[in-house]
Image 1 (tube, rainbow, N blue to C red):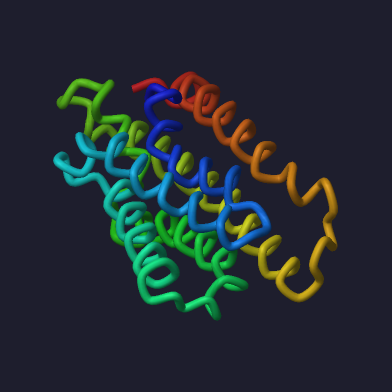
Image 2: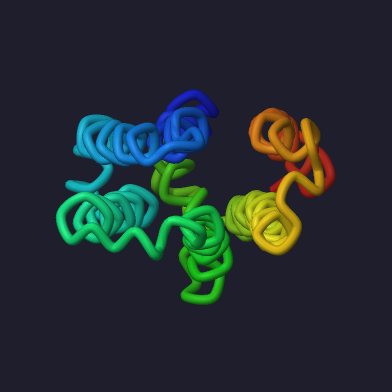
Length: 184
């Protein structure tokens, strides 16, 4: 799986985390940027019925509608929790329905005859589970910060970048490791 293409599918979420800021204007701009980027980078993937871009688009459409159009400002304190809940739901929900979201990206780089290979399937279940754990930790962080603002300080702000780097490294390294342990 090409980690750059995979990472691009999460670009709206990354940009949202980067630009949301601490004011209403910054939040609205971040939502609009993330919505536009989700359409631009997700168009092909949505056409191919991939899980991540459709849920991403749905989240940002809802947030733009709720916050900018309906002006439901009471949801602002919950947006961090909501976004991390959605990301966690993408990972564990896709595992629960038997379509790990990483497999949809991996199939683009793997010949069709290997799609049913148990090692290929296990690799993608593991990758999706790993990302799910990273997202779940982000959700726990958001919940803690909701009740205890700035409890993590700079480490809380750095978590997003650390988890992205960890996820990309794992996504790049784990498939080769798993194939060496289970050659088929």
